[in-house]
Figure: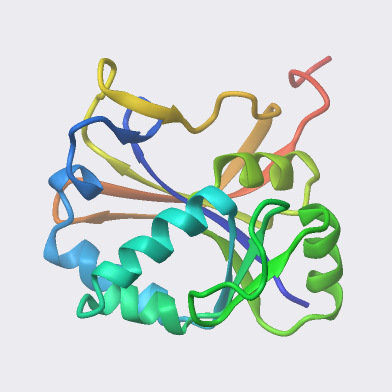
Length: 190
């Protein structure tokens, strides 16, 4: 049975990106980048929405010599969209125009290998709300982007309890936190 990992990089104040800041907030050190290369090579089908697909496929086309993008290009990808049309030009990309939650439920029961998300905030929100996420991992970058921050990750999420199963520090500053999520019907104790 396949499992699903929701995977985010975030600023300390919970943003996915910030206007004018470089990728990884300019803090992608050698230890983190090596780990990122190792985890990218693991056999997991990557799930994403149309916006993330457009962004990542464009970056992959421009950065063909970058090992992380070469690995991502070789990785199987499922793109959920009602606006894109098949065939998708980025190699190893499958277009699904149906319900992502139903796709994940079916794939977890019958499909090979594990699944993980990349970006795709609204997709991740719907998968968490439906209770189909097995692991929730964030890499926290030690920056606060209160003025320039874009795309708050957790806005609109259901209430969730997170049970810590792994933690790690990269390059003396980045924090990996991996949890098993449990969606709540309301605040605990009610």
